[in-house]
Length: 96
Image 1 (spheres, rainbow, N blue to C red):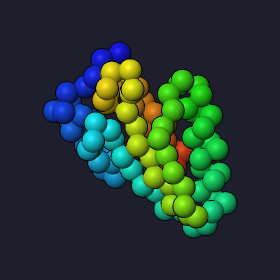
Image 2 (tube, helix red, strand yellow):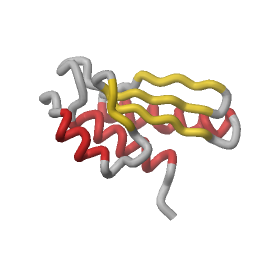
Image 3 (cartoon, one colour):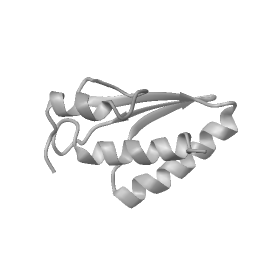
Image 4 (cartoon, rainbow, N blue to C red):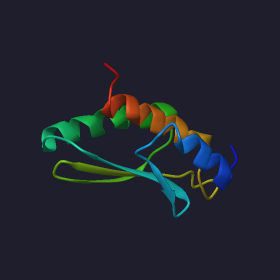
């Protein structure tokens, strides 16, 4: 697994319009209707994290979930981060 270039990251982020790149990580914030919905999404995301063996830096305040993804082994963003971001998007905003 290797660190992606800033150009590659910016190109990949076109598929993730709510995400931003800064401080060697990709970041997003989701707002839910209430704490229960937020915590439920976090629980579902946790199972994906375990399956991918990749874990986010995240925080939760009431109905807001803030997530930062980076690959510590490479000191920046790797393909692993985008795999997890894709899984998170499918959990948080399922397609109709």
